[in-house]
Length: 119
Image 1 (tube, rainbow, N blue to C red):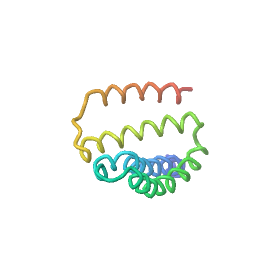
Image 2 (image 1 turned 30 degrees about the vertical axis):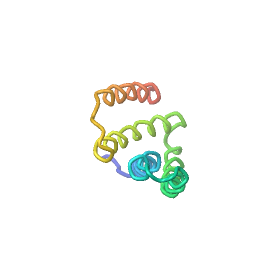
Image 3 (image 1 turned 90 degrees about the vertical axis):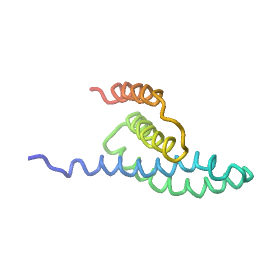
């Protein structure tokens, strides 16, 4: 019988990192849509306010993840999650057209995942 307890840590890491990336993506890019007519310093403060929540999820995520994965594996996981969060954000929130380049970028990241997680 497989114990689910061995998956709790890695799943917590991934879940927290996904939440962190949602906040990160909004902090980095939402001001381009919502605050484009405001001075840049207003966008900076708004982004910093959002980024506070990003870090509130990212720091514990990486502390949990580092118990199970190497530093390189943490970084590649972050990049995969970033793309997985960014594409829906770009298409649905920012109104960008879906591009096949997102697929190619994802395939490149799968190659990175392979090299970081093999053996």
